[in-house]
Length: 432
Image 1: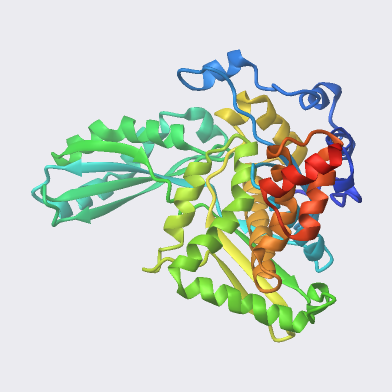
Image 2: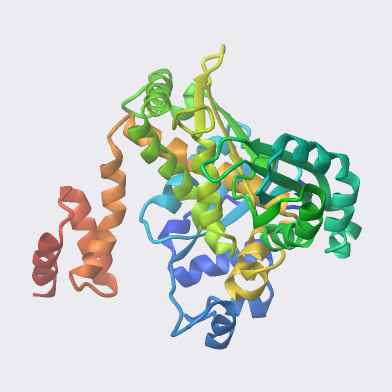
């Protein structure tokens, strides 16, 4: 990441105690947004209906999610305020709390591979699939040139088709099949449109070379060549609470991870917690969260069984070491990232300059969210903190408005009785 990335300071003291308008003003000042950007969140409806109508089909309106910001993040020495569009209580708070702990231990260290995406070209009707494979590989340069002729701008930016692979499936019910992969450097784009176009462009050439018939020509959402990685080292002192020593906390958290590593039932929920952090940022920036989810869960089963996406260990000094590696096909150009006003604003809040930087922030956020979940599960359980934050939702469902919401929520949380019926009783008493 570049030194000028991020913001001067992501540590937003007393942020939770402010009104939404006051919080937004803090972000505006921290990121140094102009008046036009600041006005986008001054009132609902930042996505004009006319813009929405051009984004998808059969538009009848727009749908809004709460947009929060996670604070306290230090990634590769740079501070970030991270926008998150999500409906679930406790997600933003949990990520911010873990980031505060991690920043005092050196922050998140991240890295990323080149932005390589795969396009698959399916070839059927082959009597000699292995011969067809070698024929395709012998014409590698010609195929790459044909693919790159689709997007001269991408090539000028340093991207383009880099290589090809050919996979043979000889024993299919419908006959032998070969699948060619175009390996494409898509630079700062997510890359779907680029690689799909290339796959379609080279299809006639592949039929000419093999004598087979090309059927599917489509990207793969298993972006196994486009990986982002995050790592943290947290001391026992940073994890000590008034009830639990840091050394014991680390042992509990490692045991919680080991449960997820061996049990797919636990791993599914464990990994959902990771995506609780990543998906809201993907949504906020106008990226394809379904593609990220698909790639993540296939990655989780790449060794033959579904397992944890993160690892949690204890090093020789007794520190907690957490890591996360994921396929991360994200972009900052094209698609909704450039058409949705709030997606463009989210990228400005992040103050980033590349898709690689966004990918690294995503995995740092996912690692923080997972840390929060296993820390809670290893101690008081997930419900205590979650239900305390959920109490506001319950108060609203019960009919509370304005200052009533906080008053009712506070009583619900204090009694550990977060139910709509109880909220209605408290609201009735309050109004009397």
